[in-house]
Image 1: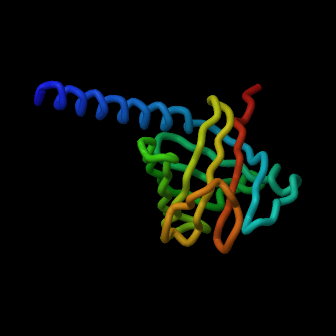
Image 2 (image 1 turned 60 degrees about the horizontal axis):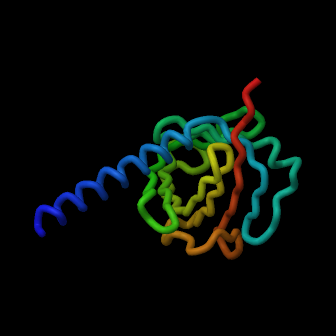
Amino acid sequence: MIKINVMAICLLAVTISASFADDTKTFDGDWDVAVAIIEGNEVPADFNKMVQLQMRGQKYLTLRMGEVVAEGTFQLMADQKPPKIEIAGVKGENAGKKIRGIYKLEGKDKLTICYALDGKAYPEKFEGKGPGMVLITYTRKKTD
């Protein structure tokens, strides 16, 4: 019985590690903002077109009109329900900030993140309502 439980724990650890690795690998790339809701207000589509997100490994860059406005690292907790992301701002607008969020991947080309900008708690739902709450749906940038 103990051998079976140890084996089950090992398999679970491998599954969680594989899931984390898969999500991190899927995050890699350049993302465009499809829809953004900030504190309950939808951001105009024209503004969304000016913002891009680049993710490589566990690092991110946020660009506005091609200029880097925020840079930092992120950590995924793919084993949580819903999966969580913790962002640490290093340079730019988010320098010194910790931002917590939840995320969902739909295939390899659609990513939705709900951010709590105050960093105190993780959002409970995929809503961009309330103070400091932001909901963004990204689509993978098409390569030519």
